[in-house]
Length: 223
Picture 1 (cartoon, rainbow, N blue to C red):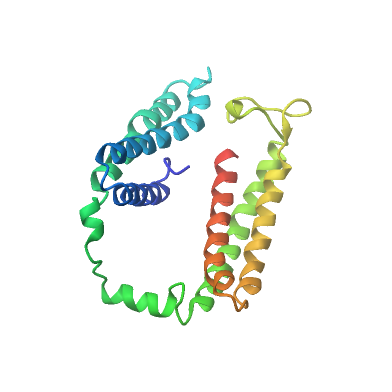
Picture 2: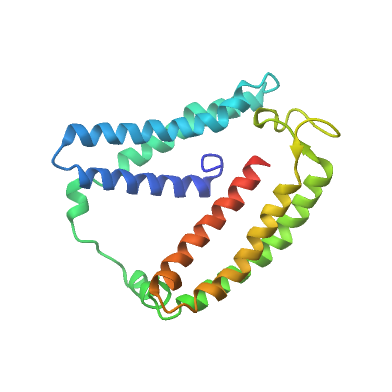
């Protein structure tokens, strides 16, 4: 999904740039090893996309514009993102320079960052808005999807072959996975933000939020 929607692609590029920067910083004294690891990271990222897109592209029903789109994602879009991240990743020397932060960034960190004064209120407001929007838009859509497609077949058949009374697996878990994620999304700020330990009240909140975003994205990608 990270390579089919521009917002997710931007996140993927930023994450890949940061990973390449960490490799460059860690292995600054071993250029050959640094370059080998960076190449391995880029290749593995492309292979991850190939594992997801490949079965769809290999399906005999994937013809015309569908085949062009899938092959474009595999051989143009994804390599382009990897090349851009590679070309713009900071070098080891650039990583050692002091980071210049704007006043807006400093104010945000002071009031809304992980250790900010109003971090708890920010998380509660954002999660409430997220739950309302997700429940309003995704639950009805998934309910219709499960009603129309009660069973799903192998991964490569998604979008091409329909399964009804026999074959495949039930699609209802897709709906209930999103429903459970929304329940967790609504409850975890009240549970974690009151903890005295900074790990649970700050970092754990960020981890849970990222995990829920992955669940939302993965369920809609595979559905």
